[in-house]
Length: 491
Picture 1 (cartoon, rainbow, N blue to C red):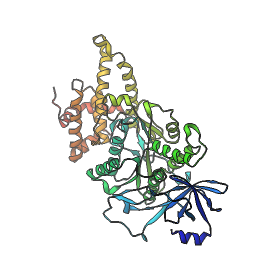
Picture 2: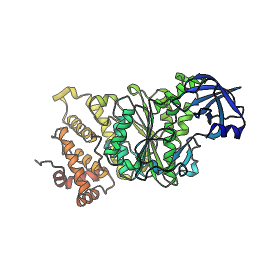
Picture 3: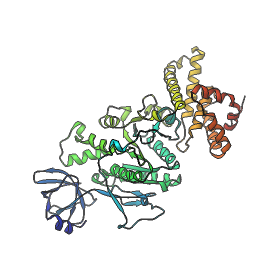
Picture 4: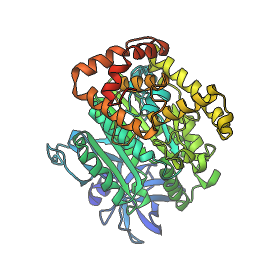
């Protein structure tokens, strides 16, 4: 993409007249189109943002600026990035250049690299399939109460520092271990945060199934703006090869702010909260590229920041209307040391429940109904000894359920084990146990389930029922053996 070659091909050029980094305004280029790539005479590239009579606003795709008076030529092509499995195990920038790491197969030569446009029309309905398979995150609270489906777009929303990233990393590792490809996009994060994510996947030994797309803080907004689009383009390439892909976009609130910055510098007309009028369209077009398709699936978890659980924020409310539900990370629950700090009563899943079998639907219905009752009973806890036995038992059972739902980031719980632990709690087996001890019981049961095929077969057979009532009754019959597996001493 040389300036001289482009000039010879299109026979037109422009001249930079004004600089508002990372935006420059050039005159000339009478046939240039919106989103077309251009090349400056010093070799730097740019993308056309805004067209006006005789003027073209161009976003410079480089940390180095261009000088007033520089010439610029058309390329006739839109932005594209290299794609392929050779990028797995690496950290790439939004332009597709490898920043950190390298896949076991090594890098390909430039002649072997396949490139794809980063902004395409979302797939048609005829190319999509109904979401039928569950997406199990290994997090009990999500899998039991706010289930997700393979190909679902679920917004992860909450205040800063409420455990969203920890949950996403845990879910990504779990999906990688289940054979899915992970595309993890970091938008406007520091270099330290990028390296931490890379090292986390490396320590969990799943790096060969992960590609991290990093638009770091040191890069200009014009480059970071491409991060979620590059991530989705990579995911589409993997999906077209028959893979199930898990995409994390962390986060779209930062992306919206960067796009607002670019638009205002380019002197586009501002709308609500100074965001450009096409921000809703931009995110909608991006997220519609995820789904369950005839070739594979793209499950997408975009992230948004909502201060003090405010879901009416402009960007947050837009994303809620685009996605198939949301997981709300409650600041108050986080302060109370609950991990993950997800509020199941204020979270929504619009297509996840259709992936559940009869048992899972019944368990979810019972637990949500009980949690609602538990929240009401907690308001009367200050009465102490004056509480009735029924209310006291409800509060105790609720606190034990909450302890079962609290789990470390590094510990994924298989779904059959989740069902057994909830059934034991429902049967008040853990009534007198302190909540801290329940974590040890869960760890022991998970370890036995994963390392002993006979124990796994025994637990899998337990959950082959069609209702929560049947499940709790069946668990009650073999309670002694399960408690032995948990390491709990029987009274």
